[in-house]
Image (cartoon, rainbow, N blue to C red):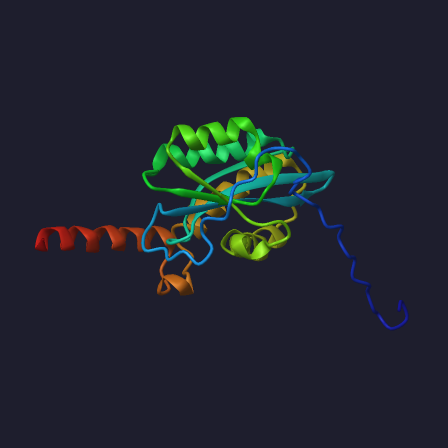
Length: 207
């Protein structure tokens, strides 16, 4: 290989972010075959990892399935439920939760009593994927794929501070405001939501 200039590809270890080995209550899947017609009807939350020089950093993100906008996120050094709770509080502080369904996997972060209490206190219905069924979280997984291909893999993050500096910028300034999404008619999520609000306002005037 050295003589022919061939370099081996290193296979990175897969990091599990879901711990479903617990005795917390599991909720039914409410979004299977559900038709979504607007924003703040279904949010989906998931967690991914970002490799740094001496370990991993974790990102919890909540996506509005209709507009594909990241409405809440948090970055942390551990998979503590506090990570998911911080992302949830961020989303609730800026969005309307009336009639909302929150969908996730069966991870302990989403089934712990503190997380469930916040959902119930805000009138949010709880939905969870079946075990070993990643398809329900496809929207969050698609965002993580975009994040890693267009941001993470292009930068050599060495420290936690590097992640803190870059990831919020990508989410807020690039993904939500600038990146064109084919499923939204090649508009960024924030522009798409503004268009929805504008059209809704026109319909109300006609009524």
